[in-house]
Image (cartoon, rainbow, N blue to C red; front, side, top):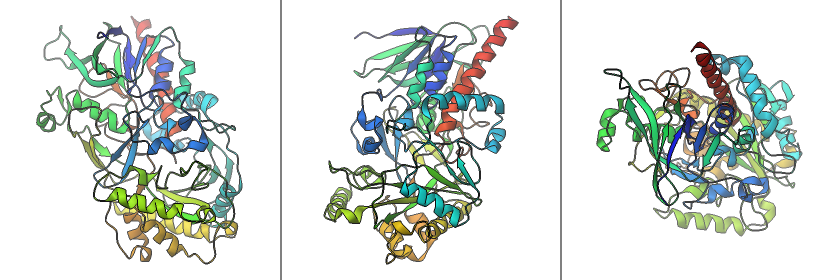
Length: 549
């Protein structure tokens, strides 16, 4: 297979935009679809298609891709330097192909602080929701969590709404009433098929830069990318001539800062350590990395519970979000349902070292030997807003297929820890509420529930025997991810308010790496909205420039 040479207006890297786009994230697909209405777009996606994969499509198979650690998996495992097991998407549509499906908007305050146009934001949310958002069915477990939240004072009750409002609400879901997932890739149905080209299994290795020949001491200009296909054959794609053509990176909070560094934009000393030619010495690339800490308890139930993903959220006034999932721990084929159980959840991502695989096998053996009634129940979890604590990302090597090194510094700021403590205290009250009585054993104390999680291998952090005596220690020892990590190319530090990379021309980053903190209770709605929002903004900019000329 010979190398391909592309000439275009937008390139998406992901995920490119006008001439090129790199698009694995929630944002890339709606952005590419919007831009294709008036311009030629090439989308480069490092993963495969979500379509035809029942483990992605079916709610009943939720979590199965997260347990797949093969090179072709739509989920790529990574472990932060903190010792928390995590995943990043490797599929068209990004995390919307893997997550628990909860759909909820950012708060009006978030929109104002981001400097976005409120009217266009609302229009963009609605554009997304026409395709991927649904009202969930409310059954026993989720209803009990909702009523328990209200009973313990997470008020008022705001009913079903996509809006972010303090109190308790039922949010949206990207699973339809047949239990089928609708992902950001579905938004490509809006695309102009005559002007968009999508390449799967196309991994971008670096962005190519030139300079304006007519200027002296001019800034670097992005004008193409080097990528490899599934066979390892190298190709190049270039923007057409024209000052308005550009490359857009939408590779996510790990992929976007990693790609900038591999392309020579980052801290000069770090790039030189990896023998990368420095295009722009920008030490803020990879800084401000955050992951919202999540802690949970498993509540065994004396009554049968439905299989449910997150439908209800308690938006507290102290900075913690309370959510829940439920369902049988094992299906008929012997694989677990929830994201926290050994085979498909956090356990499944532990590395094969230090006797961990033996520990997992022993844990699974113990669980499988239990009576199935002992496995009925679900998880109630809390997620810290923000967060305030931040870390950083560095290159591990120069292979874009490998994960970079990332540190999130969970609970480094004591305010994050205090929010976790209050969130866990609220969960205890919910479990003890009258509304939740049908789903709890009265002889199992909250301390015992904490110990169940504390004694499990939910991360690689050292354990303490006194966890049940201290919610603070429980939060620290059992911290997990809910996959809402962000930062690394933040607005005002690496990109401007139009998401243009500072210090170079014809290059933008539009994804969660630009966020200073996570929007709403769950970010996917806002990520998809931002793709549409910025696509419309860019189309308007180009139209205005054409009229001026």
